[in-house]
Length: 269
Ligand SMILES: NC(=O)c1ccc[n+]([C@@H]2O[C@H](COP(=O)([O-])OP(=O)(O)OC[C@H]3O[C@@H](n4cnc5c(N)ncnc54)[C@H](O)[C@@H]3O)[C@@H](O)[C@H]2O)c1
Image 1: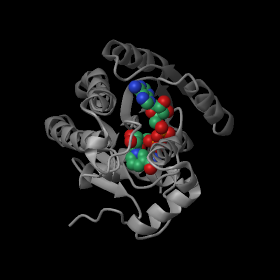
Image 2: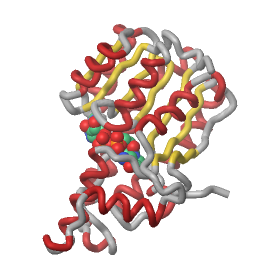
Image 3: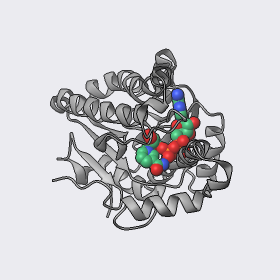
Image 4: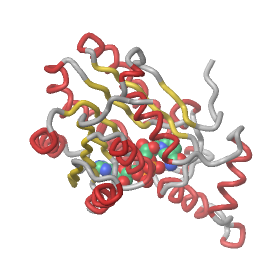
């Protein structure tokens, strides 16, 4: 399927590792110009790896999404380097680093940082990139939320609540931006073996006596068997494929949607 993304400029925030990096690679495979943005300096290496495997116009920007001025500077810098931005993907996400079950295992102080990055960060990025897209009356936004944002997950309550807020903001933005021919969708991964899940496992282990702590593989296999009907990990590339499709003209009439790539973890009706 020709997705028609060749030479279009794409920004992927949270592209240093995991799902964001796979999304950047998949856009590059389609011939898009890609800007990888992350607060981690390793985003430079991630961009370099894409240049080596795929080539094309690729750049990296080290910036923190909670810094609105830095987002505005990134937007200007990327437009100058790669041309008009057509697609923005927000793949940044953090957890609290603690485990709920129940939520009062955390304290109120565990909440603000998660909301600042997962929600305010997405708002900052949207404000920074959207004026030029509105002017051109063209573009797409994709937010990476989570299955957790749809089920009141007990694993990490601030994370879960922040992801629900992100879905809600995406729907609001989809309504506001539809008259400008800008589509906004949310993609929710299920269980993906990335650094994020390793941190969730590590936080869970902290709640157990040392001798009862499972290995990462044991923890993942047990959880997946319990919650993922297809009984397997999702791969970063599985998520990337949907994000890239949503940016294409084949998805021209899809906006305001919340789509899961989760092996059946959450089933909408
Ligand atoms: N891995 C999963 O199973 C899973 C499940 C559901 C949802 N998600 C979501 O998918 C997205 C990608 O997650 P991942 O698993 O690839 O995690 P990850 O930790 O591998 O990647 C997240 C990236 O965001 C960057 N980042 C964090 N805070 C930032 C900030 N303030 N400014 C800029 N960059 C920042 C990190 O440096 C990292 O490169 C996240 O939104 C996450 O919540 C992941």
